[in-house]
Length: 78
Length: 174
Image (cartoon, rainbow over all chains, first blue to last red; front, side, top):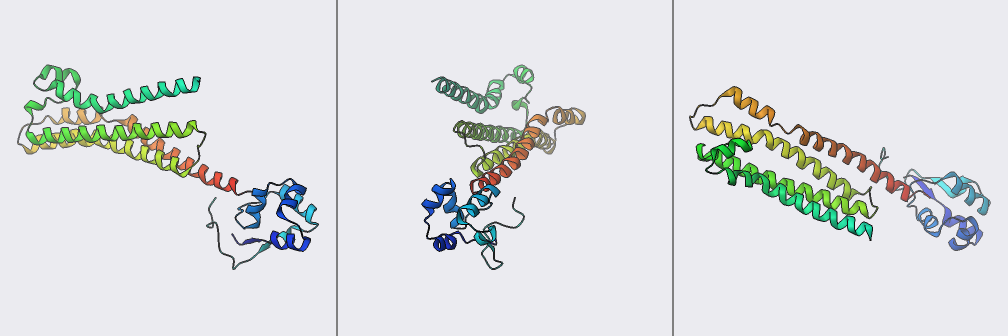
């Protein structure tokens, strides 16, 4: 996976905690934690919409393509 | 309560099946020892008349066959237990189903190798063998059903492997 989550940066910029974001978006703390720590393998459009709406940003502000990031999933797996 | 009753009934059935599978083939040879008519009726070779090597081959094959059947039944039992908890797509289940498939294929191979090695040992001992009867014995006793079940289990294992990977994907989809 070369997609890096920048959710922690966005939260720091907005001075929001993960708990606040969870309460505002309705996304569970577990899922937000998976996204924040970079363990997520896929993200739903509905999740992105909720995050972008609450953080007042674009999807590109939350997710970033980094060719140097360590691969979590083998290519062609799934 | 009702599921507990079904569970214990299933357990008893599996124990009976395991005992039957483990004992019925060796028991046939023990019963037919010294009784050629009974051996013919049970459809097994009369061991008293055969060379020692053939007797050893047949007995070793029967023991391996029974042991493999016990392992297969045990794996099916464990799989049924895991399925009852609601866990279907996991790598442990994939390994179990794959193991069942491999053992079933091995059992079907034993079904061909046992009469073949018995016939060869009779030939090597210098006794006459009717080839048409020998070939018919191998062909008619070929456990095609077991082989098909084994292959099916391997295909199912691949499907479960895919399912397990998809379950992991779903778990990490936010």
